[in-house]
Image (cartoon, rainbow, N blue to C red; front, top):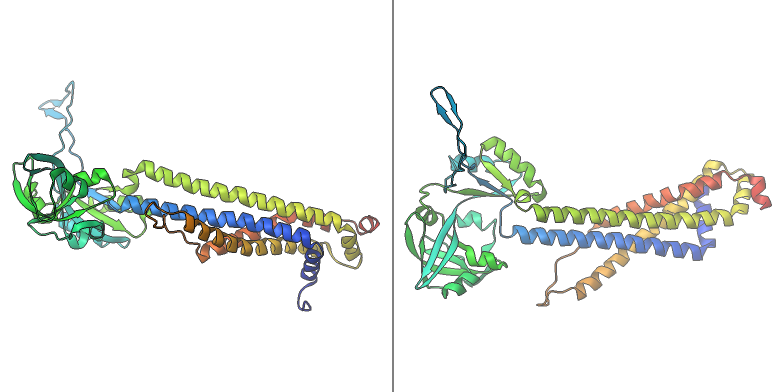
Length: 408
């Protein structure tokens, strides 16, 4: 029943039914375009999320460290002494001044999730004749494991961290020839050393990290690195990883401690992520343009084919505004129907992709989901594009002279 529809909608539906072949072809074209937009958007979003998850799975979003020590000019009794060469100062391992206060200040910020103090520095792992350079990281397990999920990456033993335990990577375990329960000696440049028991072996998915990274209790690292009561850095995670640079600036201005965001320390990776985002927008734009041109071309042909009907409608009293709205409705209906079909098509393509795109071990490559917000956005974009594409044919139809149109 169409008695409740306005004249323009009734005429638009009739035109679409009478030119059914053209209508079907353009709806299929729109649906393919929308499917490409939805599928590519979901795929790139899933790819970016997977990249970021992998990069940030072994590091904090923001790391607070002491400012670098700089060489200062010498002052004589009568002024500044100018030296021919100012040698840069060697950077010694230092603690963050009043780190407990800094930790509490950062934790109070609304966007901060976890704050974990760490004592980290270079050391040597020795077992028999084997000697390897390592990075010794002292942690508070309750906090640190909420930033770097080492327990889920344990391949042998457990993630137990006490004053006598140490967690090491798979490559280091192989180099030293140790297993869970064996003892290794940790020595540092300060001359301190301690024998620790391997309580767990982890795999971070990176050979270099597995060769260097070791995890011990915070107090153990403080003692070995001569940082009694101090910490060399404070790790921070936040809710929105893309806001890391902004929040790092806020932390630095409020605490006076240098705050490095993951965006600054992974510039090349972040540039690649931004390039993917730009490429995604470019794909959407070109596909939307092709959809607009397809809708516009079909409606222009429809105006030419139906010029006599348009002339009769104008002679019967239809206004130019009504004729314009008639073709705008056609463009909007075609685009909306195509967007719904395109969302279904994108879902089907996604299911096929998830079936065949697998890791060598048979697991899913990375999660990709088509959320309702993406479908709604695609439908809105397609409908708006359809209305815009229909403007030119609608203007042409509204400007037809009734007498000339009826005469053909």
